[in-house]
Image 1: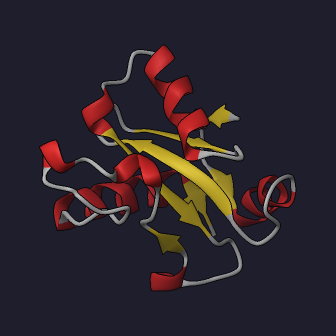
Image 2: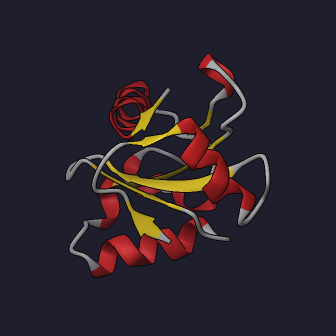
Image 3: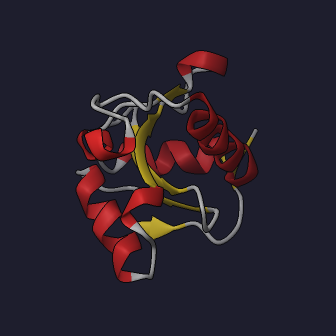
Length: 113
């Protein structure tokens, strides 16, 4: 598990993915602090790591990246940690368009071609 401090390439992302699921890597974004954690078997593990580093639960959103895919198929906004009826998100998917855009922005910042 790692909290990215600088951008990595898709090739590096693919190497991380090979450690766990092969074609996919689990990620958690802190949309308030602008952080991205990657590379764990469970989104909950990444969530815990970010919480231990001072993140607020309401700012953490889980998703998956598929390094070999492009555009809409690259990011999958699906995670059990996203089920939060108290935040208007009763689904595993990130339903809020603005939150999706913040996640996509962080991914663009930290994952380069």
